[in-house]
Image (cartoon, rainbow, N blue to C red; front, top):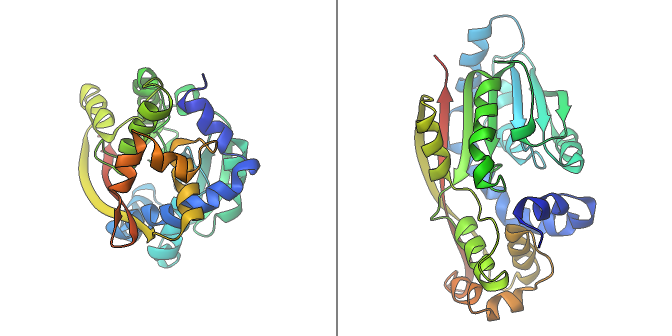
Length: 278
């Protein structure tokens, strides 16, 4: 049986583009909330001042399709920031994802390097990047590999890191657990949680602070195609349609609870984890 990581890689492909576009009909708001929650313009200006006259070096872990840098450009007024162009590294096990992100990057971000690999297998010099971030990026890392992945993350970080990840109370994690129970007899690797990530950072004695944001992904109850694609992407399985999910003894009750006042409402709780090195 194919497990979470393998299926996720297969769905980051040209074949699954329609499913991906339907997913982002609802999921783009995830990145809008991240971009608007924090003063990213000032944050970048502070880091630019720290490094002086050279460019900042940034690594985007599991870059996906570049929704986070796109949201920053759209909502965080980075084009007005007093910074040099940022050398932007792309890391993802999918060449499709790297190509997608490369296409959407705009000033101040300029592609500097590309790595088709997982984070836990990534190798670089210690402190190679001023900033490393992973936004909604680490869900499919197997639990037993999560600590190694975070060690690689911290190793490559010169000073600053940022991780945005859903908690165990979020739709993404709750729905995936109900999917494994309903369609995989309870077998399979659950998504990693923000709580697990924070616990590992504590064990590693890495300084960090945490903020939480809560919001909903919402759309009309009649937007069947978009919701079906969104939910299929949430579990990386396009072999089951919306009706099948609604009629399943595990996913059905959960999904029916997400329909309120003729709207689909998927509740999210996300931890924003800011890491630092002294």
